Length: 130
Image (tube, rainbow, N blue to C red; front, top):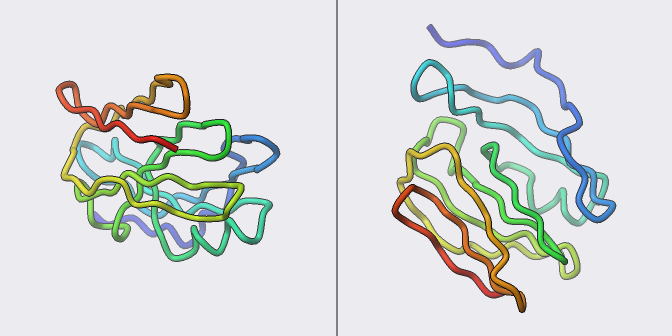
């Protein structure tokens, strides 16, 4: 059964360095709908332009000047996904790693001096220097 998400509305999700994120449920998939896929918007127009037309999972990890996000190609593309870095200062998006991680519990870790590690599965991590 395919659910209809057209009646979903944007709801407050989180705030990072005065950038307020709202998300709207667009799809649920995987095992009993455990993977949620959202549209995102913020209170910053330059950031919204980067997010528009893309879909995201629950993962967000903040840094000093931005955030890591899990981005899907479309709302039906799970587990095909891309780890991205959204830079608030320069209003840029960097695609870091395309993968097929079906693991839904991504975690971030600050390695200091602008270097971060993002765990995309129990056995795989990606390091990135901001």
